[in-house]
Image (cartoon, rainbow, N blue to C red; front, side, top):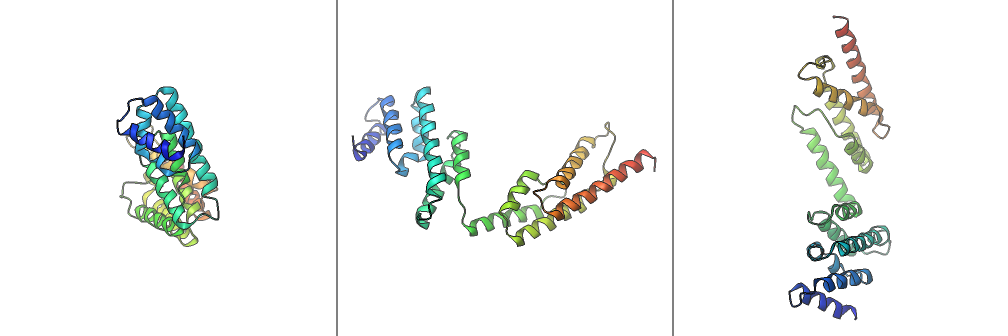
Length: 234
């Protein structure tokens, strides 16, 4: 069966002209293995196929799609001959898959990891992240350290400087060492313990900027001194 007739057969089956779902899924897996046409990776079609597949077929189908996604991410997107238009098409396809909640999470994650941003898109994403950081509500004292590391890796020099300045300000204005409670019975103890852990993470993570590390170390010194003063009854 050639590709065109296989596509036609799949479409006929999908439209309900035949009820042999097992053959339908087997055809889909076969053509997906043999053909690079993005039609076969359309998320809604994939979801439809999984709904009518046996458990064994679901595993085969998922593995087939994962292998194809891996080939695309590892080979196609790294090919310098890939045209900007084709790259944009692949990125859109990966984005669509990553946002389809009915697709298995492993497939969504692989698709999301494969999305390649343009420099303009990357800069816009990081600028938006910094803007959110600047406008954090007063009661929020935390920046997820893993997320911070990932953003810093993608940021340009100017953005890294802005991120550092913002986090340092957040440390200085939203973490009052003398207000942290060391009494395990105090209502705020658990929250204050989280602040301590957050400061330690910021101080010790080598993937952050030296300025963030140093600012967090300075805050930690104040925390330790405040604890010492409290224990001494000062």
